[in-house]
Length: 257
Image (tube, rainbow, N blue to C red; front, side):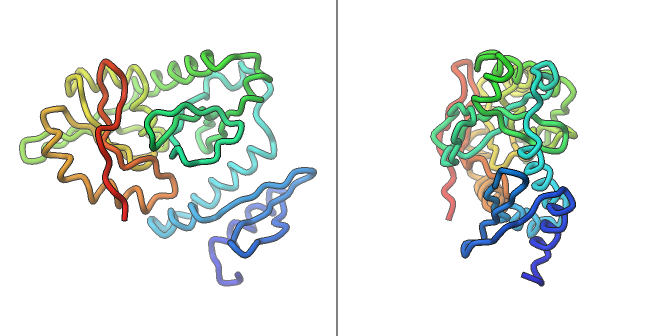
């Protein structure tokens, strides 16, 4: 692996944090240890994202995420509650004890502590430690997302007389999740009407359009949605989602080759 740039930079960064790669198995899975714990890590998503945009920050983001597991979640609810958000994850993920809520057949919501650089998923044990229940966690995530939504921009492009929107926010990794903020849904309803539609192939990318433009955009977004989905290390879904007063539902999806 001497010529493997991703592996070598990752190895150097991990070791600088006091952790060790004990072995790499035949499938490329890394076994990383510190003290009395060992973590299994795949570099597949990092390689995919690096190939897409040549950005080494993906390597260091993974290192920070691993470090957060080593350090552990803060003990006090008051220290974490203002940094709780929703993340969107494909439903075929092995969630283990992490709290997750299905949205459609293809993706779930998970809850994460986000410090501005890394997402640390919240497990049942964390809520027990904080002395809260899942409803409190959900309410706090909605409150925090609403605060972000009120500072986000909604940009509109005119495509042959049809309106295509997207969310603009400096916290790019939360763009897709902000669609599930009550405040953002109210803003989008005022802009596009209710119902409106959205695609969120990856966590930092979403398009929104009004109901009357469903036929126009659903036939034109297929290649964009599937390419984003296939080429990102953080895919969510290729579904077309309908947001209405009854909630969120998938009305179909683009097939991925």
